[in-house]
Length: 500
Image 1 (cartoon, helix red, strand yellow):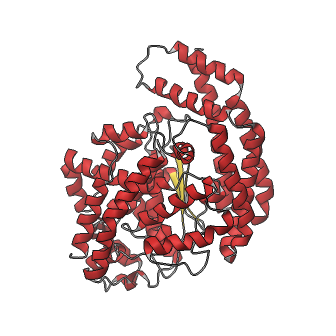
Image 2 (cartoon, helix red, strand yellow; image 1 turned 60 degrees about the horizontal axis):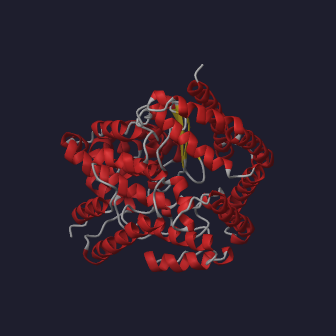
Image 3 (cartoon, rainbow, N blue to C red; image 1 turned 90 degrees about the vertical axis):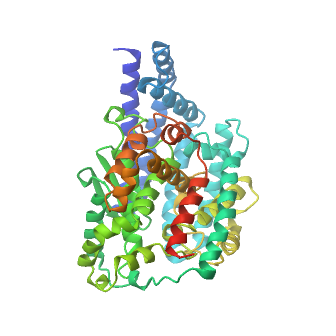
């Protein structure tokens, strides 16, 4: 057996352990009894320790170098060369973390997530505070271990989720988005044609929402023969292989938006994983290239496709049949209601235009906590101040404020910017499809997203993380990532909806 083939076998074994940890995590958040958390933390910590030992051993490093030398001169864009690149990167990163730190991080995260769930339910920030302080310490410690020569401290953590992205670039794009969308928001508020959203708050039995979720997810291309829809407090998607990509959602009996569009959102994530090429299976290449690109797929399915008029002209009759309370409302009324622009407290329920403000808030707060400029105890005060500044709202409690997201319990500092980057990627892909295959847009306007999704599968999904995010966006669109397509997209869409 060649050194490369031996390396692939080891990589696949490491992948299997990683997926087993993810499966334990998925079960913990969906099915596990509450009292099982302590043992589950230890189970996950043990597997994480084993994986870390295997993935950082001197023998594994020697094998990587031997396989790399064996492939010397191979096409740098080949699957083999790209796998070596990713494995080398991951090995280098993993080697810097002491085994004690890896285990401690798993334990602290597990305890923090349980504390966050309780604190959020009871609106008691004090219960989460000591855990948040530990999480901040862990994040600061990670930066010292990684020490990748970043321009800014935050770059090191951002790079874990969006390879090659710099905080300065994010800041520039976010500032431009803020500067150019605030006037649009003001115009909508001052002279936009009013939209009645009462039809979204009717009687929507949860069991029927679940049934419709299975229907609508299939319509956008989510393969439920290789998927599953569960119920949780905070929706997420998990992929254990291209043939087992699961999603979760949450439901409100008197509000259809969270369950319906949460399902579409998470379907986009799962479709990305389902669409990776079979040849990449059980390797680090068989996943999204970055969280920003991942978010671009979920936001595309949720918003660009899922909130389009053409899509609902095709599927609104089925929605009306499922929920008779909608019978008296036209598809145009429904379309305008689901695209209503209104600053809100909850990120996952924010409209397409103001969503980015929620991310800018978190981006700025994360940097402040990481640098030490903001103490954990002062998070609620800072959160509320920035909410008022960016959205003109002050949360009435911490459950609807700084406790609403699970991310900081995991810990996932550096992750939040990718949500807004996903909006920018998605809009740029939309423009590229318009230019490269106008028929796909015509079909979408007729309620048929198949050609649109096929373009995504060919240009984004199938390559997994074989290429870097910047390479993927350049290959797909011919241009580097920019905020401008997003500005054009929301300006055209909401100018029409609000008759500005």
